[in-house]
Image (cartoon, rainbow, N blue to C red; front, side, top):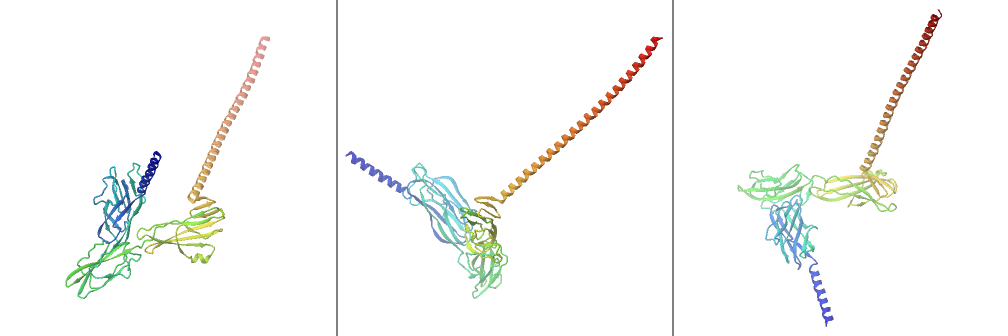
Length: 453
Protein backbone atom coordinates (compact mmCIF):
# COMPACT_ATOMS: atom_id res chain seq x y z
CA UNK A 1 0.00 0.00 0.00
CA UNK A 2 2.75 2.40 0.95
CA UNK A 3 4.62 1.49 -2.22
CA UNK A 4 1.53 2.19 -4.33
CA UNK A 5 0.95 5.53 -2.59
CA UNK A 6 4.58 6.48 -3.11
CA UNK A 7 4.37 5.65 -6.83
CA UNK A 8 1.18 7.70 -7.24
CA UNK A 9 2.82 10.60 -5.40
CA UNK A 10 5.78 10.50 -7.75
CA UNK A 11 3.47 10.34 -10.80
CA UNK A 12 1.40 13.33 -9.63
CA UNK A 13 4.56 15.26 -8.73
CA UNK A 14 6.07 14.70 -12.17
CA UNK A 15 2.74 15.59 -13.84
CA UNK A 16 2.40 18.92 -12.03
CA UNK A 17 6.09 19.64 -12.47
CA UNK A 18 5.64 19.09 -16.20
CA UNK A 19 2.56 21.31 -16.19
CA UNK A 20 4.59 24.08 -14.53
CA UNK A 21 7.38 23.63 -17.05
CA UNK A 22 4.86 23.77 -19.87
CA UNK A 23 3.44 26.99 -18.47
CA UNK A 24 6.85 28.53 -18.12
CA UNK A 25 7.83 27.77 -21.67
CA UNK A 26 7.16 31.24 -23.01
CA UNK A 27 5.36 34.57 -23.13
CA UNK A 28 4.81 36.93 -26.03
CA UNK A 29 4.73 40.63 -26.93
CA UNK A 30 2.52 42.01 -29.67
CA UNK A 31 1.37 45.35 -31.06
CA UNK A 32 -2.19 46.44 -31.70
CA UNK A 33 -3.03 47.20 -34.39
CA UNK A 34 -0.38 45.21 -36.22
CA UNK A 35 -1.12 46.89 -39.56
CA UNK A 36 -3.00 49.82 -40.99
CA UNK A 37 -2.94 52.79 -43.35
CA UNK A 38 -2.41 56.30 -42.02
CA UNK A 39 -2.12 59.59 -43.84
CA UNK A 40 0.98 61.73 -43.67
CA UNK A 41 0.56 64.42 -41.03
CA UNK A 42 -1.99 62.40 -39.05
CA UNK A 43 -1.58 61.09 -35.50
CA UNK A 44 -2.33 57.49 -34.54
CA UNK A 45 -1.87 55.16 -31.55
CA UNK A 46 -0.07 51.82 -31.29
CA UNK A 47 -0.53 49.75 -28.11
CA UNK A 48 2.02 47.29 -26.69
CA UNK A 49 0.60 44.14 -25.06
CA UNK A 50 2.02 41.09 -23.29
CA UNK A 51 0.51 37.60 -23.21
CA UNK A 52 1.98 35.67 -20.27
CA UNK A 53 0.66 32.32 -21.63
CA UNK A 54 -0.69 31.29 -18.21
CA UNK A 55 2.44 32.32 -16.26
CA UNK A 56 2.71 34.88 -13.52
CA UNK A 57 5.20 37.61 -14.33
CA UNK A 58 6.40 40.59 -12.33
CA UNK A 59 8.55 42.62 -14.75
CA UNK A 60 8.92 43.45 -18.44
CA UNK A 61 11.44 45.24 -20.61
CA UNK A 62 10.19 46.46 -23.97
CA UNK A 63 12.67 47.86 -26.50
CA UNK A 64 11.15 48.96 -29.81
CA UNK A 65 12.73 50.15 -33.05
CA UNK A 66 10.90 52.42 -35.53
CA UNK A 67 11.98 54.33 -38.67
CA UNK A 68 12.63 57.94 -37.53
CA UNK A 69 12.46 59.23 -41.10
CA UNK A 70 8.83 58.05 -41.36
CA UNK A 71 7.48 58.21 -37.80
CA UNK A 72 7.74 60.60 -34.87
CA UNK A 73 6.78 59.82 -31.26
CA UNK A 74 4.56 62.50 -29.78
CA UNK A 75 3.77 60.66 -26.53
CA UNK A 76 5.35 57.39 -25.32
CA UNK A 77 2.81 56.61 -22.59
CA UNK A 78 -0.96 56.63 -22.62
CA UNK A 79 -3.77 54.35 -21.50
CA UNK A 80 -4.22 52.34 -18.31
CA UNK A 81 -1.00 50.28 -18.13
CA UNK A 82 -0.85 47.32 -15.72
CA UNK A 83 2.68 48.43 -14.77
CA UNK A 84 2.58 50.09 -11.35
CA UNK A 85 6.32 50.51 -10.77
CA UNK A 86 8.61 51.95 -13.46
CA UNK A 87 12.25 50.89 -13.06
CA UNK A 88 13.17 53.74 -15.42
CA UNK A 89 11.07 56.47 -16.90
CA UNK A 90 9.84 55.55 -20.40
CA UNK A 91 12.49 56.59 -22.91
CA UNK A 92 12.23 57.49 -26.59
CA UNK A 93 14.46 59.05 -29.24
CA UNK A 94 13.09 60.48 -32.47
CA UNK A 95 16.65 60.75 -33.79
CA UNK A 96 17.61 57.09 -33.32
CA UNK A 97 14.12 55.62 -33.61
CA UNK A 98 14.09 53.91 -30.19
CA UNK A 99 11.47 53.42 -27.46
CA UNK A 100 12.09 51.66 -24.13
CA UNK A 101 9.89 50.63 -21.19
CA UNK A 102 11.11 48.96 -17.99
CA UNK A 103 8.69 48.23 -15.19
CA UNK A 104 6.71 45.68 -13.24
CA UNK A 105 4.16 44.86 -10.58
CA UNK A 106 4.49 43.78 -6.94
CA UNK A 107 4.24 40.13 -5.84
CA UNK A 108 2.52 37.84 -6.70
CA UNK A 109 2.78 39.37 -10.22
CA UNK A 110 0.22 39.26 -13.00
CA UNK A 111 -1.19 36.54 -15.24
CA UNK A 112 -2.84 37.95 -18.37
CA UNK A 113 -3.43 37.26 -22.03
CA UNK A 114 -3.63 40.94 -22.99
CA UNK A 115 -1.77 43.08 -20.50
CA UNK A 116 -1.44 46.67 -21.72
CA UNK A 117 2.10 47.95 -21.21
CA UNK A 118 1.65 51.30 -22.92
CA UNK A 119 0.01 53.08 -25.83
CA UNK A 120 2.38 55.09 -28.02
CA UNK A 121 1.21 58.05 -30.07
CA UNK A 122 2.96 58.47 -33.43
CA UNK A 123 2.83 61.14 -36.10
CA UNK A 124 3.23 60.06 -39.73
CA UNK A 125 6.07 62.19 -41.15
CA UNK A 126 6.52 60.93 -44.70
CA UNK A 127 4.99 58.37 -47.06
CA UNK A 128 6.35 54.85 -46.98
CA UNK A 129 6.13 51.44 -45.30
CA UNK A 130 6.94 51.83 -41.60
CA UNK A 131 7.91 48.74 -39.61
CA UNK A 132 7.92 48.76 -35.79
CA UNK A 133 9.82 45.83 -34.29
CA UNK A 134 10.89 44.48 -30.90
CA UNK A 135 14.64 44.41 -30.22
CA UNK A 136 16.38 41.29 -28.88
CA UNK A 137 16.96 43.08 -25.56
CA UNK A 138 13.23 42.85 -24.75
CA UNK A 139 12.35 40.59 -21.78
CA UNK A 140 9.46 39.10 -19.82
CA UNK A 141 10.53 38.07 -16.31
CA UNK A 142 8.80 35.23 -14.49
CA UNK A 143 7.66 35.82 -10.90
CA UNK A 144 9.85 32.97 -9.61
CA UNK A 145 12.26 35.01 -7.45
CA UNK A 146 14.93 34.26 -10.08
CA UNK A 147 14.01 36.74 -12.79
CA UNK A 148 13.74 34.04 -15.47
CA UNK A 149 13.24 35.48 -18.93
CA UNK A 150 10.38 33.59 -20.63
CA UNK A 151 9.88 35.79 -23.70
CA UNK A 152 9.34 33.45 -26.65
CA UNK A 153 7.88 35.59 -29.44
CA UNK A 154 7.58 39.30 -30.18
CA UNK A 155 5.35 40.34 -33.05
CA UNK A 156 5.84 43.82 -34.46
CA UNK A 157 3.74 45.71 -36.96
CA UNK A 158 3.88 47.23 -40.44
CA UNK A 159 2.00 50.37 -41.38
CA UNK A 160 1.44 52.11 -44.71
CA UNK A 161 1.86 55.87 -44.56
CA UNK A 162 0.17 57.55 -47.49
CA UNK A 163 -0.44 61.05 -48.77
CA UNK A 164 -4.00 62.25 -48.06
CA UNK A 165 -6.42 61.79 -50.97
CA UNK A 166 -6.90 64.89 -53.13
CA UNK A 167 -9.69 67.29 -52.32
CA UNK A 168 -8.76 69.54 -55.20
CA UNK A 169 -7.28 68.97 -58.70
CA UNK A 170 -5.68 65.62 -59.41
CA UNK A 171 -1.87 65.91 -59.56
CA UNK A 172 0.69 63.74 -61.32
CA UNK A 173 4.43 64.09 -61.96
CA UNK A 174 6.31 62.65 -64.96
CA UNK A 175 9.65 63.24 -63.18
CA UNK A 176 8.56 61.65 -59.89
CA UNK A 177 5.75 59.20 -60.67
CA UNK A 178 6.23 57.10 -57.51
CA UNK A 179 5.04 58.71 -54.28
CA UNK A 180 7.07 56.41 -52.01
CA UNK A 181 10.23 56.12 -54.14
CA UNK A 182 13.42 58.16 -53.86
CA UNK A 183 14.77 59.99 -56.88
CA UNK A 184 18.04 61.77 -57.65
CA UNK A 185 16.23 64.18 -59.99
CA UNK A 186 16.06 67.51 -58.14
CA UNK A 187 14.14 69.32 -60.89
CA UNK A 188 10.57 68.09 -60.34
CA UNK A 189 7.71 68.88 -62.69
CA UNK A 190 4.02 68.66 -61.73
CA UNK A 191 0.90 68.54 -63.92
CA UNK A 192 -2.72 68.72 -62.83
CA UNK A 193 -6.19 68.55 -64.25
CA UNK A 194 -8.33 71.59 -64.89
CA UNK A 195 -12.08 71.46 -64.43
CA UNK A 196 -14.50 73.56 -66.38
CA UNK A 197 -14.98 76.98 -64.84
CA UNK A 198 -11.61 77.04 -63.01
CA UNK A 199 -9.86 80.37 -63.56
CA UNK A 200 -6.83 80.32 -61.23
CA UNK A 201 -4.49 78.00 -59.34
CA UNK A 202 -2.39 78.55 -56.25
CA UNK A 203 0.40 76.17 -55.33
CA UNK A 204 3.49 75.81 -53.15
CA UNK A 205 6.33 73.37 -52.57
CA UNK A 206 7.60 72.86 -49.00
CA UNK A 207 8.49 70.17 -46.46
CA UNK A 208 5.29 70.47 -44.44
CA UNK A 209 2.87 67.62 -45.13
CA UNK A 210 0.02 69.85 -43.98
CA UNK A 211 1.17 72.94 -45.86
CA UNK A 212 -1.42 75.31 -47.32
CA UNK A 213 -0.84 77.46 -50.40
CA UNK A 214 -1.82 81.10 -50.10
CA UNK A 215 -4.76 82.73 -51.86
CA UNK A 216 -2.56 84.48 -54.41
CA UNK A 217 -3.08 83.21 -57.94
CA UNK A 218 -0.16 81.61 -59.83
CA UNK A 219 -2.14 81.85 -63.07
CA UNK A 220 -4.20 79.38 -65.04
CA UNK A 221 -1.35 77.11 -66.27
CA UNK A 222 -1.67 73.41 -65.45
CA UNK A 223 2.00 72.66 -64.81
CA UNK A 224 4.88 73.84 -62.65
CA UNK A 225 8.61 73.07 -62.58
CA UNK A 226 11.06 73.64 -59.74
CA UNK A 227 14.84 73.61 -60.12
CA UNK A 228 17.68 72.60 -57.80
CA UNK A 229 15.42 71.40 -55.00
CA UNK A 230 17.38 70.36 -51.90
CA UNK A 231 17.50 66.78 -50.64
CA UNK A 232 14.63 65.54 -48.48
CA UNK A 233 10.90 64.88 -48.54
CA UNK A 234 8.88 67.62 -50.23
CA UNK A 235 5.17 68.25 -50.69
CA UNK A 236 3.48 70.02 -53.60
CA UNK A 237 0.23 71.68 -52.48
CA UNK A 238 -2.38 72.84 -54.98
CA UNK A 239 -5.84 74.40 -54.95
CA UNK A 240 -8.11 75.83 -57.68
CA UNK A 241 -10.29 78.91 -57.84
CA UNK A 242 -13.71 78.62 -59.35
CA UNK A 243 -16.37 81.32 -59.35
CA UNK A 244 -14.08 83.43 -57.14
CA UNK A 245 -13.96 80.74 -54.46
CA UNK A 246 -10.85 78.75 -53.57
CA UNK A 247 -11.57 75.03 -53.42
CA UNK A 248 -10.09 72.11 -51.50
CA UNK A 249 -6.40 71.20 -51.51
CA UNK A 250 -4.47 68.39 -53.12
CA UNK A 251 -1.03 67.19 -52.02
CA UNK A 252 1.71 65.32 -53.87
CA UNK A 253 4.88 64.10 -52.16
CA UNK A 254 8.31 63.62 -53.70
CA UNK A 255 11.52 62.27 -52.15
CA UNK A 256 14.81 63.67 -53.45
CA UNK A 257 18.26 62.30 -52.70
CA UNK A 258 21.18 63.57 -54.78
CA UNK A 259 23.88 62.64 -52.26
CA UNK A 260 25.71 59.33 -52.80
CA UNK A 261 26.40 56.93 -49.92
CA UNK A 262 29.34 57.59 -47.64
CA UNK A 263 32.87 56.72 -48.72
CA UNK A 264 34.10 53.34 -47.56
CA UNK A 265 37.20 51.13 -47.52
CA UNK A 266 37.51 47.64 -48.99
CA UNK A 267 39.25 45.18 -46.68
CA UNK A 268 40.79 42.13 -48.34
CA UNK A 269 41.50 39.10 -46.17
CA UNK A 270 42.81 35.63 -46.82
CA UNK A 271 40.77 32.77 -45.38
CA UNK A 272 41.99 29.21 -44.94
CA UNK A 273 45.36 27.47 -44.97
CA UNK A 274 48.12 28.70 -47.22
CA UNK A 275 47.77 25.82 -49.68
CA UNK A 276 43.99 26.18 -49.92
CA UNK A 277 43.59 29.86 -49.13
CA UNK A 278 40.94 32.09 -50.68
CA UNK A 279 40.80 35.86 -50.77
CA UNK A 280 37.62 37.71 -49.73
CA UNK A 281 36.67 41.38 -50.03
CA UNK A 282 34.75 42.94 -47.13
CA UNK A 283 32.88 46.23 -47.58
CA UNK A 284 30.03 48.20 -46.02
CA UNK A 285 28.68 51.73 -45.93
CA UNK A 286 25.43 53.61 -45.30
CA UNK A 287 23.29 56.34 -46.81
CA UNK A 288 21.74 59.14 -44.78
CA UNK A 289 18.54 59.67 -46.79
CA UNK A 290 17.14 56.99 -49.05
CA UNK A 291 19.18 54.14 -47.55
CA UNK A 292 21.35 51.47 -49.15
CA UNK A 293 20.01 49.47 -52.07
CA UNK A 294 22.78 47.16 -53.35
CA UNK A 295 26.48 46.72 -54.14
CA UNK A 296 28.20 45.91 -57.42
CA UNK A 297 31.67 44.35 -57.61
CA UNK A 298 34.28 44.01 -60.34
CA UNK A 299 37.60 42.17 -60.03
CA UNK A 300 40.19 43.03 -62.67
CA UNK A 301 43.52 41.48 -63.58
CA UNK A 302 45.64 44.62 -63.94
CA UNK A 303 47.89 42.90 -66.49
CA UNK A 304 44.93 42.71 -68.90
CA UNK A 305 44.47 46.18 -70.48
CA UNK A 306 41.04 45.33 -71.91
CA UNK A 307 39.64 44.36 -68.53
CA UNK A 308 41.16 47.49 -66.99
CA UNK A 309 39.46 49.79 -69.50
CA UNK A 310 36.02 48.14 -69.34
CA UNK A 311 35.51 46.45 -65.97
CA UNK A 312 32.45 44.22 -65.74
CA UNK A 313 30.35 44.67 -62.57
CA UNK A 314 28.03 42.12 -60.96
CA UNK A 315 25.67 42.60 -58.04
CA UNK A 316 27.18 41.04 -54.92
CA UNK A 317 27.24 41.15 -51.13
CA UNK A 318 30.01 41.30 -48.57
CA UNK A 319 32.08 39.17 -48.11
CA UNK A 320 32.82 38.67 -51.80
CA UNK A 321 35.10 35.82 -52.92
CA UNK A 322 37.85 37.12 -55.21
CA UNK A 323 38.23 34.76 -58.19
CA UNK A 324 42.04 35.09 -58.32
CA UNK A 325 44.52 32.98 -56.36
CA UNK A 326 47.76 32.94 -58.39
CA UNK A 327 50.53 35.52 -58.08
CA UNK A 328 49.74 38.85 -59.70
CA UNK A 329 48.26 42.31 -59.20
CA UNK A 330 44.49 42.68 -59.14
CA UNK A 331 42.04 45.58 -58.70
CA UNK A 332 38.86 45.15 -56.66
CA UNK A 333 36.20 47.75 -57.52
CA UNK A 334 32.99 48.13 -55.48
CA UNK A 335 30.06 50.45 -56.24
CA UNK A 336 27.59 51.16 -53.44
CA UNK A 337 24.13 52.31 -54.65
CA UNK A 338 21.44 54.01 -52.59
CA UNK A 339 17.71 53.70 -53.30
CA UNK A 340 17.74 56.87 -55.39
CA UNK A 341 20.32 55.50 -57.82
CA UNK A 342 23.30 57.48 -56.52
CA UNK A 343 26.50 55.51 -56.04
CA UNK A 344 30.00 55.85 -54.63
CA UNK A 345 32.89 53.72 -55.84
CA UNK A 346 35.79 52.37 -53.80
CA UNK A 347 38.93 50.66 -55.08
CA UNK A 348 41.51 48.35 -53.59
CA UNK A 349 44.55 46.67 -55.13
CA UNK A 350 45.54 43.14 -54.16
CA UNK A 351 49.10 42.03 -54.91
CA UNK A 352 49.74 38.31 -54.46
CA UNK A 353 53.51 37.83 -54.25
CA UNK A 354 53.41 34.15 -53.31
CA UNK A 355 51.11 31.70 -51.53
CA UNK A 356 52.61 33.10 -48.33
CA UNK A 357 52.72 36.86 -48.99
CA UNK A 358 50.09 39.29 -50.31
CA UNK A 359 49.43 42.97 -49.79
CA UNK A 360 46.77 45.61 -50.40
CA UNK A 361 46.32 49.29 -49.63
CA UNK A 362 45.52 48.35 -46.04
CA UNK A 363 48.54 46.20 -45.23
CA UNK A 364 50.68 43.11 -45.79
CA UNK A 365 49.66 39.55 -44.96
CA UNK A 366 52.39 36.97 -44.30
CA UNK A 367 50.75 33.54 -43.93
CA UNK A 368 48.05 34.20 -41.31
CA UNK A 369 49.73 37.30 -39.88
CA UNK A 370 48.30 40.61 -41.07
CA UNK A 371 50.34 43.79 -40.64
CA UNK A 372 48.46 47.02 -41.42
CA UNK A 373 50.42 49.77 -43.10
CA UNK A 374 50.05 52.08 -40.13
CA UNK A 375 51.75 49.47 -37.94
CA UNK A 376 54.49 48.93 -40.52
CA UNK A 377 55.06 52.68 -40.83
CA UNK A 378 55.08 52.96 -37.05
CA UNK A 379 57.68 50.20 -36.79
CA UNK A 380 59.81 51.85 -39.50
CA UNK A 381 59.58 55.21 -37.74
CA UNK A 382 60.41 53.50 -34.45
CA UNK A 383 63.48 51.82 -35.98
CA UNK A 384 64.56 55.11 -37.54
CA UNK A 385 64.07 56.71 -34.15
CA UNK A 386 66.22 54.06 -32.50
CA UNK A 387 68.83 54.52 -35.21
CA UNK A 388 68.76 58.29 -34.73
CA UNK A 389 69.12 57.92 -30.96
CA UNK A 390 72.01 55.50 -31.48
CA UNK A 391 73.76 57.87 -33.88
CA UNK A 392 73.15 60.74 -31.47
CA UNK A 393 74.69 58.84 -28.58
CA UNK A 394 77.61 57.74 -30.76
CA UNK A 395 78.25 61.34 -31.79
CA UNK A 396 77.82 62.44 -28.19
CA UNK A 397 80.25 59.75 -27.07
CA UNK A 398 82.69 60.73 -29.81
CA UNK A 399 82.44 64.36 -28.77
CA UNK A 400 82.95 63.45 -25.16
CA UNK A 401 85.98 61.32 -26.10
CA UNK A 402 87.41 64.18 -28.16
CA UNK A 403 86.89 66.59 -25.30
CA UNK A 404 88.55 64.18 -22.89
CA UNK A 405 91.49 63.67 -25.28
CA UNK A 406 91.83 67.43 -25.70
CA UNK A 407 91.83 67.84 -21.93
CA UNK A 408 94.39 65.09 -21.46
CA UNK A 409 96.59 66.54 -24.21
CA UNK A 410 96.33 69.96 -22.54
CA UNK A 411 97.23 68.42 -19.18
CA UNK A 412 100.12 66.55 -20.78
CA UNK A 413 101.35 69.72 -22.47
CA UNK A 414 101.12 71.49 -19.13
CA UNK A 415 103.06 68.71 -17.48
CA UNK A 416 105.64 68.96 -20.25
CA UNK A 417 105.88 72.71 -19.68
CA UNK A 418 106.27 72.09 -15.94
CA UNK A 419 109.03 69.56 -16.62
CA UNK A 420 110.76 71.96 -18.96
CA UNK A 421 110.49 74.69 -16.34
CA UNK A 422 111.89 72.30 -13.73
CA UNK A 423 114.76 71.30 -15.99
CA UNK A 424 115.45 74.99 -16.60
CA UNK A 425 115.47 75.70 -12.88
CA UNK A 426 117.72 72.68 -12.33
CA UNK A 427 120.10 73.99 -14.93
CA UNK A 428 120.00 77.40 -13.33
CA UNK A 429 120.65 75.86 -9.93
CA UNK A 430 123.56 73.87 -11.35
CA UNK A 431 124.91 77.05 -12.91
CA UNK A 432 124.55 78.86 -9.61
CA UNK A 433 126.15 75.91 -7.84
CA UNK A 434 129.06 75.93 -10.25
CA UNK A 435 129.43 79.69 -9.87
CA UNK A 436 129.30 79.33 -6.09
CA UNK A 437 132.00 76.66 -6.33
CA UNK A 438 134.18 78.85 -8.40
CA UNK A 439 133.67 81.75 -6.05
CA UNK A 440 134.51 79.47 -3.15
CA UNK A 441 137.69 78.33 -4.85
CA UNK A 442 138.62 81.90 -5.56
CA UNK A 443 137.92 82.79 -1.98
CA UNK A 444 139.97 79.91 -0.69
CA UNK A 445 142.77 80.79 -3.02
CA UNK A 446 142.59 84.33 -1.84
CA UNK A 447 142.50 83.35 1.80
CA UNK A 448 145.26 80.91 1.24
CA UNK A 449 147.41 83.56 -0.30
CA UNK A 450 146.91 85.82 2.71
CA UNK A 451 147.89 83.14 5.09
CA UNK A 452 151.20 82.57 3.22
CA UNK A 453 152.21 86.13 3.66
